[in-house]
Amino acid sequence: MLFRRKEREEIELPMAPLIDCVFLMLIFFMVATIMRVNPPFPVDLPRAQMKEEFPRKRYNVYIGANGEIAIDDMLVGTLDDLDRFFAQKAQLIRTLIIRADKMAKHGDVIDVMERAKMRGIESIAIGVKEEAEY
Amino acid sequence: MRRGETRMRGSRKTSSPRINMAPLIDCVFLLLIFFMVSTTFAPMPGIRVKLPPPGRPSTTKPKGLVLQIADPEPGNPYGVMILNGQVVDMPTLFDRFMNAPQTAKNMLIIQAGRKVLHQQIVEVIDLAKRAGIDKIGFAVVARTP
Image 1: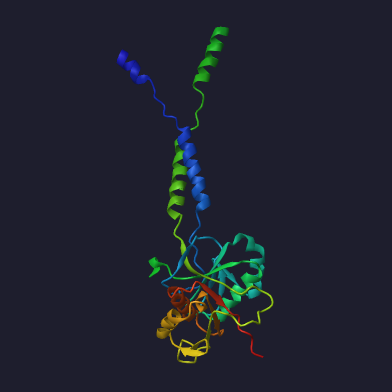
Image 2: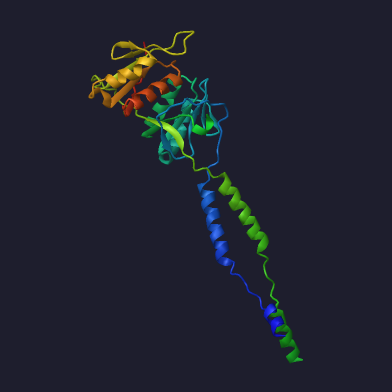
């Protein structure tokens, strides 16, 4: 009898702190996640040995071999559109990373740099190939 | 009668409906794992560059090294490069950067034609950085009339 009574006694694990913890982690990862976006055209980045590391952020400018411009996966038609974009989002961009194809023209890259500079983006970097992409 | 009623109420209270938490937690865990896997903390490699401040172009002669790159000729992807008045090519450029006087080595200004390939610019910047030139700037080419 005594044994039976013991068995019936339920030991409940407190689930609430666990769930709190999991929710916290969930929210952290949701905020920290930046989806890997690909530009709408292929971009073959040039290689370099000396490079700095920049945190992966949103709003990277891609330049294709034929002078196409895209912000993340959004194609930008003209330089005026790009200028408008920089005017809106300049506050949010700490370092603008311009990821241009190696066959892109220097003039197109300079055009993007100039627009960014005019809208107050001080820090500009040229994106180079990642080791994993070799 | 009354006694019976109260008893019934009491029994109903003890068997209060419980919300089944298990599916919710399953769902949350699934989301958590999805976001953990899709999060990339890998940094993006890049080269920092400097541009002259916008506005009035400076008329004074720059102190550092100036590398001019001409638009590439048809058949050759690389344009002709001129460093401080002397024609240089890619293999000798690194030595030129290394042998440059210390005062000139604080900054390199690249003045390149619009049709020069981005690849060549990045190669030049890479060589300059390896030679210890930290500041790299681009001169905006004055449009030919």
